[in-house]
Length: 523
Image (cartoon, rainbow, N blue to C red):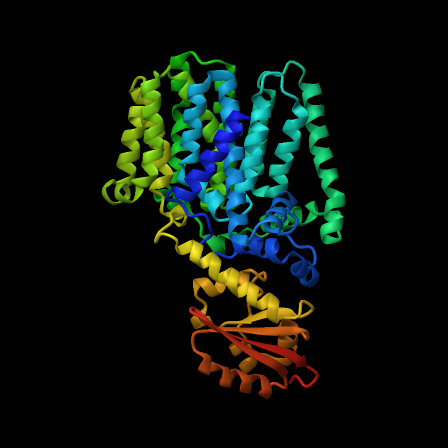
């Protein structure tokens, strides 16, 4: 209980007072899909039915609960605190059971303050909860005399939250069998936990979305993605050039390459070697997915974030293996971990990324305690803290993302009060006004975006009929309300009848609603 209370307090304090954002930035689509489900679940299920997004029940269920018991802003922070605290508790015990209290506290301090980990939490996508479930599964895997059923339960929850973490799950299985004397029994218990978890969620899925086969949609999406590798290549690019700026990958690469040297020097035990093998296997599997299967597993920062689980467990192992710290040096190490995020902006301005990381890495390899632990802590932070791909994690300018969240919740509240839930919300945003905030507003309703100005001017009647629903309410988002006259004329010219027009003004948009009343004369 003391550990849990400390983890909750640390998570809450750092999320509320630290330099990281608690909310997704505008311009992203994916995180706002889930905010939309948490706030408008019944509406989205009614109009879109089962989808790939809603199939991630281990994230959907906690989100629905949080947003039912608290206002949206508080609920979002509650979810973030839960993800961070759960991860901290699991990592603490995974390290403490084998190396004692001090290395466990240091590992948790590194995780709590790490920009890469916090980026998975702050943007409200399934990566954060999937990582938290995996940390719990890892803890049960290394717990002395632990029950492997629990490992199966939590690793399955992680996998069902996001199949992108499959390489991590496979790599963590190393820790399940690292000292298994009765591996067949352990495998059966693991399978029992996994199958039981899938089955328990089936009736919940049937109640929530009307289909018990919730797991199918993620599997189908994954098969489709890997069946058409050109799709991801077109979206994210090809080739290894991304490695030149992906400093977040330096820490796992260094520890995989140099881990055996450190472990041999310390005459490490079986668990330490299993932790290294787990990290090496995870990096190898993601590399195969990236370079052989065109899976953008390393290229895209939030895909490679699943390296966090084996990386920070192995870091905790190294903190335990590299020598016992005095209370004074342990306090210095914790203070260093806490201070680094608050100095990141200055460090990013003055430090050359790769030379700084290479120096930190070299000192980590050759120094002795306590400098070795201090350099390991600094290297873990700098590797992701200097990576531009996760710059969205920082709360800069202060409070900006919170204001984005409030603006979108205000808009959603207005639409919920002004639009009949039986009508389908469809946004009309001209491409030249398709700014970050408007994109995220559209994403709350699953971003089924159409350029109605272009389509109504040139597209066929059949094409328009496929895009514009007969029960639609058009939501015009614009900073130029004078364009509404031209849009009304476009609708009339194509034989689309509208009515019940109403207008609301926000600092960042004029919102005009029009109910589509008749498409029978569409031409």
